Image (cartoon, rainbow, N blue to C red):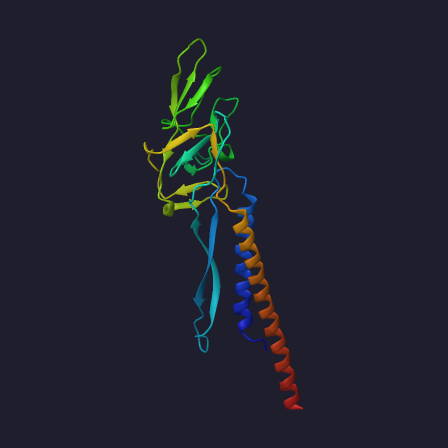
Amino acid sequence: MMDRFAFTSMTGAKHAMGQLANTANNLANVQTPGFREMLATFRAVPVKGASADSRAFVVDSTPGSSWQSGPVNVTNNPLDVAIRRNGMVAMLTPGNSEAYSRAGRFSVGQDGVMRGAQGYPVLGQNGPIALPENHSQLQIREDGQIYAVLRGETEPTLIDQIKLVDPDPRQLTRRPDGLFDAAQTQPANPWVRVEQGALEGSNVSIAQAMVEMIEQNRLFDLNIKLVQTAEQNSRNASQLVSLSRS
């Protein structure tokens, strides 16, 4: 009969693989603008039952994301925007709900709609921001106001204002597409500031992520060895029982 500590080791190996997946995802997004590192930790869950008081299962948990600012690089692209300190950009998802992102790499499609991460429309004061045709000298000011010189004019005209929010990170939930959902729709925050012609990069440290991956691989190997030890102990116990009966 196999020692039951094999099942405890098995949960450790399983959740070590989960942490490896998180770390691999972080490394895959090192070059993703505005990406926030996924954090994962282990926690012990005591096993309840007779003769199990000293045993505990290991469960991985993802308490949230690292909100440390990433490096800001100057791109001189008028559609690139870096958020200073705290704050996020509001975007309209296919379900007509808001999602939030730190990624400030925008683009303008043939329909004139300004789009951000995953191609979602960037929200303004009254819905998605749409730029007029044949505009020039696009300016995005610190408070998110968008100005452009229209055809036949010489002075810039206010087009719209990017909806900038500052939600509590503890109330945010990461979406599969990398954006964040909030428990409720966030109001625009007039104190959030942006910088045009710059882009914030990912806050993932490659060196730290590589160290974590090595540690998680070792932890996985250790738990697998414990399972193998339990199997060997079971074989030895079976042989001893057979000898005692013969």
